[in-house]
Length: 239
Image 1: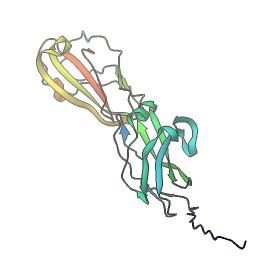
Image 2: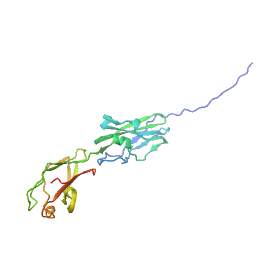
Image 3: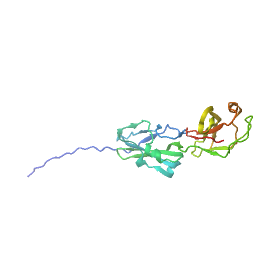
Image 4: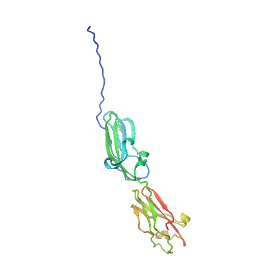
């Protein structure tokens, strides 16, 4: 019959084969931490046109995503449904993931995905150091029953820090009564500062300046140890 019709269909195909880019201006975090909330500067961009969809992090106990997986990328969402060519806001680990980390050095890797499904990963964008363990005091010293006229006596009270940040300072306090009661003779005074060691086991004296403040009779000495994240342990009446 010679009848015919024409049909035209026009459609576009959007192609994005370019991987997102992760830029890491963040150095390793050498400060020891005892709480979460520190933000880090690792940026993400996408130049392929489909725009960023999500950015994530993972945490491992060793470099190169080796050792123990402490937080997987699936659990480390920084931002989702981004819809932008870049994400440059500084970001922190979630409290839940922070709680999973052990004491010591932990290594963080980053991952970015765009709307086309392209994914880029950059290992070890920074490391962080965690120490939740308070230092300890070991009192090997009996009460000093000898009467003293000067500060020459040395006492056996030891200090340790196993959390990783190391001992910062050791302090002494002197009172006229037990359990830090009575008259305050000398408030917390540095016995040693900047120790920077996991242990301090050298026998020590109270020092001439502290001894000169002591009353005639019985004086009670208490000690306090502080590590580099600020965790503190005190023990009353070590002698």
